[in-house]
Image (spheres, rainbow, N blue to C red):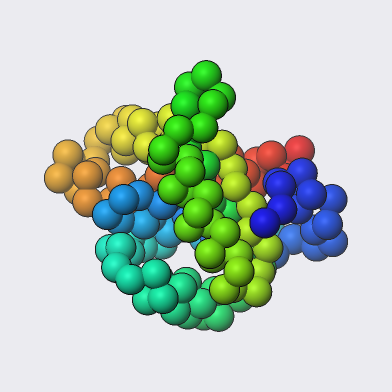
Length: 151
């Protein structure tokens, strides 16, 4: 795994990126355009065996010409890492080992809250909001990372 700062230095040209929000039951997936301007919710994967997750991610990467994965890193509000962060770190290391694209962790504090609030401002009904919360959180995470990369 590399840091977002290392990725920013290494990136020679704009490319499509994938954002992941790794939850305990569901994984939100988002992708961005080639110019890295807009992150779009893509899908929600229901967590299953690790090898099935890896295969599904490989398919998405191949179908969408993804060059790197940005994974939301759930730090505590004080910046420390708790059990959720350790779990994400473990899964991220496995993804990095099995998939041949750069993998970066991105501080995702408040991403789920932000995605939920944004969808409420857009007047999306609650059941639809909850159904898409994981992929919306992944888009929120990816948007934060591409905004950082573009500055």
